[in-house]
Amino acid sequence: MTITAFFEKHQRVLAMSAMLLVAFFWSVVETAAQFLPDGYSPVQTVWSRYLVHIFFMMIVLGPRQRTALIRTRCLGMQVSRAFLMIGMPFFFIAGVVLMPAEHVWLVFWSTSIMVLIASRFLLGERISTGLWVLCCIGWFGVWLTLGADVPPISWRLLIPVAMGFCYALYVIMTRIMRMESTYANLFHTALCFLNMKYLGSAHYFTERTFYNIISHSPNCRTGDKDNIPPWLKHH
Image 1: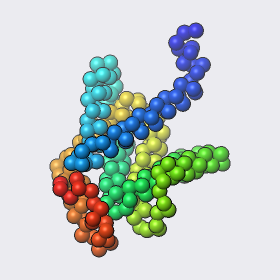
Image 2 (image 1 turned 90 degrees about the vertical axis):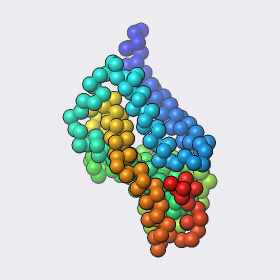
Image 3 (image 1 turned 90 degrees about the horizontal axis):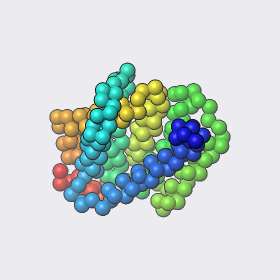
Image 4 (image 1 turned 60 degrees about the vertical axis):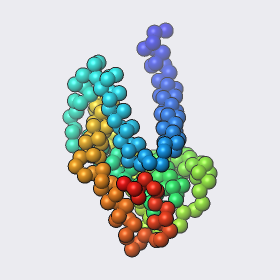
């Protein structure tokens, strides 16, 4: 059996295995970030990830893909997807300032349900009852893993909801752009993220100015200010 025939025969199994590896490596990346010194902010961490991302693609894939890395027929949508990747860390920072981190992650990991809702109304896809049930069970499993209590009903919950919506819409836009090269999608996401994130005073606004807005807001309780991460106070 040739390699091509093997891949065609076991396409679904290989695809599921690849997704399991993605989930594993994502868990490793998120866990490794917890061991960084307190002086490193999440914004610096995310920016470093995308910097390595784009240099890896240029060095490893660039010689072979060449202009295919940047060739796209929908530049506007590529830029829009990158904005969603900026929204995720922005709302994460807002969330951990105003509420416990486990509540932020609990709400965010309802993203799979948000993707189903978005695909139903934006793509017109039919979602089976079994898929709804499986996503809800998965979210409940995340809840048990985090060991989080029931978050109080508050406007603050809208922040991790927005964080999850950014990722859900990113997934939907990726599906809409499925005719685009995967390499081009990944490259433009990283390139636009790096340019927009640190263009002008974006870094300053994201951290220091955002802290000032939150900490002086009349909706910010005294306890919230005490829980603001040190890296955000000192920037």
